[in-house]
Length: 219
Image 1 (tube, helix red, strand yellow):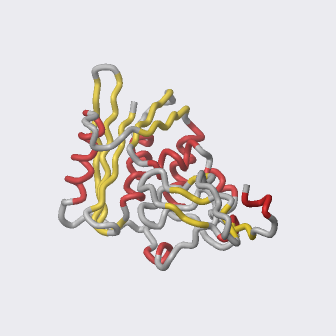
Image 2 (spheres, rainbow, N blue to C red):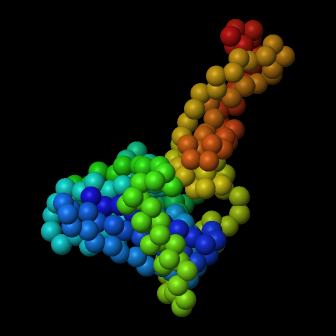
Image 3 (tube, one colour):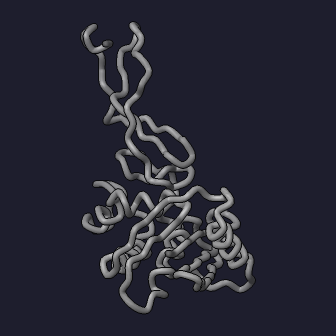
C-alpha cells in the first residue's frame, strides 16, 4: 500500500510531497520538495515517487486525499488528455502534462488501484504524509521544479466540459443536472452545470443554456 500527499506553502510557492509505503510490518518513507510549484503538482509527484520506488512488479493500492489526482486517473481523464496530445478540449491544453505522462507510464507497467481518502481526518498514514510534505516544503534551498510552467495557468480558465480543472482548487469538475423547478417567467434555463466535488463551486456553461420557446419546456 502507498499513501501520498502534497503540500504548498503558497499556491504556487514552495511545495513538497510525502510518501509512506506499507507492506506487512514494513514501512518506508520518502519526501522532497521544490522552490516554486503547485499543490496539484506535488500530489502527482508523490504518487510518482511512491510507484518509482517499487523494485519489482506488484499489486498496489495507492491512497490520496487529492480528488484532482484520484479522479483524473480513475475516471480516465488523464488518459484522455494524453490521447488528445495533452489538450483538454479544442482550445485549452492540459495542465502538468510532464507529470501525468510519468504517472501514466508507471500505471501501465503496474496494477495500481487509486483510492480517495478524506484528508485531515485522523488517518495515521495520511497525517504522516502531510507532515512529510509540509516539512519538505519548508526546507531551504529547494531545487527548481523545471516542469512547472506558470504561464500555462495564468488568466481565467474557461470552463467548458466535465474534467476541466476547477478555477479555485483545480479538482476536475463533474456534470450535474439542476434540481430546481423552472419559473414561469424564465426565458432560458441551463440543462446542466459543472460542479467541483472538492470545494463545491458551481459553473454555468454556455453550451448548456437552452432558450424556452414553448410552455411545455417549463415542465
